[in-house]
View 1 (tube, rainbow, N blue to C red):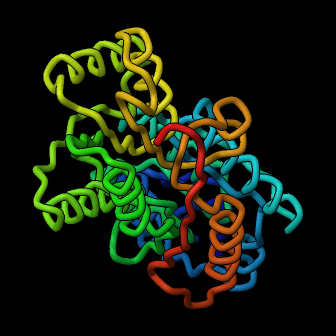
View 2: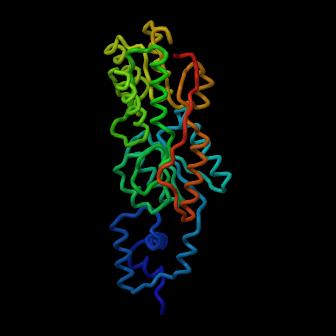
View 3: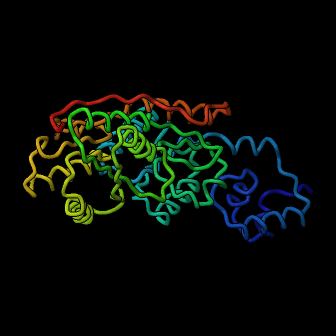
Length: 325
């Protein structure tokens, strides 16, 4: 009498669904559970039915998105664009807000994998999370370095940093600061700071970078920005590597009696639609959100279909000229 999957489940002491997941390497499972299933299969000399496995592997038409927060205008616009494009392509979306919290990100990741998503698009990443390596799923990263097998979609961060710093220098700023953070996150966004440093040195100026961690709450950021003004009283230009923090810098400067751009010139980075509506005066480096979204979705679908894709795709940026320089 042929051994069935129900027999394996009974001997292993797990559900039939769990056995199926082990057979198809889908979903998050502990090493202990996987071993129990394999031991039961060996004991019963169970041979998986190839047809059944193929039926099980059918697409769920679900895609998971993990991003730091949709409270930020850039990520909010990006997630909205990704959701629309995926929906138009026939996929439903499950979204997780990680706030760069590795435990929260790992929890979301396990839940998404257990929901049998066909793939993931990720803009939040703590490199040490093993599930990204064990997921056996197509994954696309936006502005995050995860591992050598996961393609990255990013704006031209280096060119953006170069443009921002040159704008400040050409507008007459002589003591120019830069904000960056978190420093322990592997992201192409750090190329903004690298470009700032290179341009400053090229013009025989001393670069100064001040840490403003993305994951800090607004009150903590305000406190740190006030400290920055106290530490660098001669600052008359600043390249802030995201628009939300640039808005806080502008608010702090105004509260401290600075006039923008007369006393302090400010350039941000992101250029999301909401920021341009609410703070059109901010000069910023505009990321091509819609194009990044399109390329990310196209890349993920190609990976789901088993096709090769480039491991890094860099999208050009442009300047949104406001009145802050």
